[in-house]
Length: 261
Ligand SMILES: Nc1nc2c(ncn2[C@@H]2O[C@H](COP(=O)(O)OP(=O)(O)OP(=O)(O)O)[C@@H](O)[C@H]2O)c(=O)[nH]1
Ligand SMILES: [Mg+2]
Image 1 (cartoon, rainbow, N blue to C red):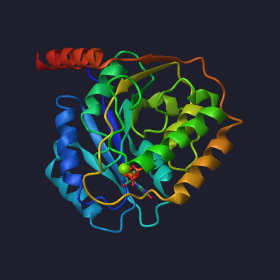
Image 2 (cartoon, rainbow, N blue to C red; image 1 turned 180 degrees about the horizontal axis):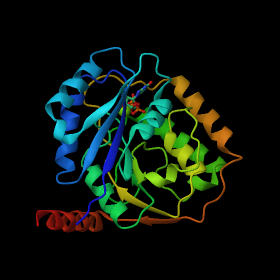
Image 3 (cartoon, protein in one colour; image 1 turned 30 degrees about the vertical axis):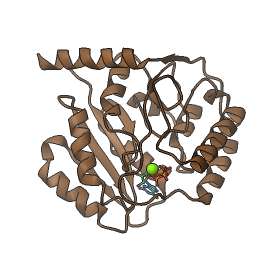
Image 4 (tube, rainbow, N blue to C red; image 1 turned 30 degrees about the horizontal axis):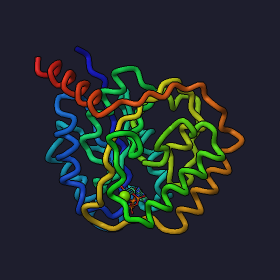
């Protein structure tokens, strides 16, 4: 069986306490599935040294990336990761374990069932946003509603701002993504051509080490980003399919059985 390769793009800024365990957990999640981990790092701490140390030790898993001395923020880092990625599918996730690495195997199952994009959701049956405090939950839901009001392409999607997703690399053909804002996924949903989205449930985790980089400026950038996308966001005739936890477990079990042969 020829398996498609995944590139996991991870933007990092001062995440030295997370790198080693993150790489270990990603490799566990993607057992027997070809993959590379692409870090794009704008850190001022020892994160890049940690990445190099892990890369030297685990070369069979292909830990790669780039350190930028004068990086231009989160969205620019993710876009740079897309340029460096060599996989058939590209995943984007944070370095702080709020996006559980086990999701990678689950998203891969959805991609194998023909999804153009797999979007994990905290807000469908089986999902939870328990990793956020009450204030952050409020800000996060306001951001989601603002997005859905002004961008019709987000309306059918239950969790367009979660920040973790996987997509077919071809979606990037013929689009130019702008390195603005914090939510590169909404930029893609508004600019790319796609027909089928599979949503899978997940539980948003708590940051395990290091500090949040989210500040008030990020909220302002987000609102600006939504307004700037408004004119370009055409309503895609997109089919959104929601998998239950049971369906997801069945798909993962069936993949595991195939990979054991
Ligand atoms: N390369 C790069 N990565 C960044 C930058 N800012 C944040 N990141 C990374 O982007 C991811 C998300 O940042 P977080 O600080 O966790 O933001 P958040 O998840 O929205 O907020 P919290 O819920 O408070 O953690 C993490 O992996 C960060 O290290 C940046 O300027 N450059
Ligand atoms: Mg975070």
